Length: 144
Image 1: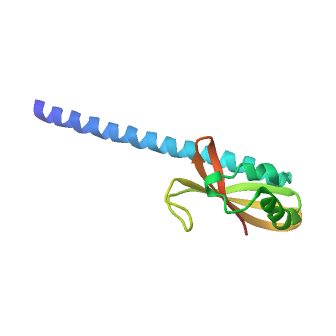
Image 2: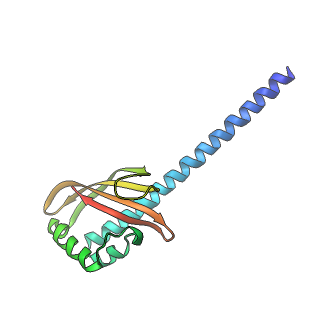
Image 3: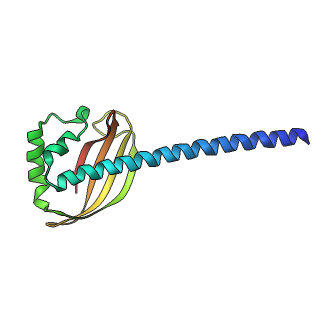
């Protein structure tokens, strides 16, 4: 009887430790998603305001395509500015991605937003971020 109680106690301890570890990992994942989402929204607000120079500075330096700030600004003026002001934006989903085309394996957050613009019907925006020494930084932006 004592042996059975000891085995049950040991099994319960292992189970609780596993649950605690799982809960901690889940909490860390949520914290990463929240921080990445907040960084993406801050960056998108820079685009919304037409502050493309500052938005360029928020891109991860290690992932910048061979383009200058001036090229980035011209690209955004041609691609994003014609849509007009942002009327509404909501998060559709956040996915942790470890691997995708054109970048080394790592820890990335891909965030999809549903966005309505003044001169464009409801569309999707995708922002992919990577965490570096100063926080979450943008490595890719697409508007569909």
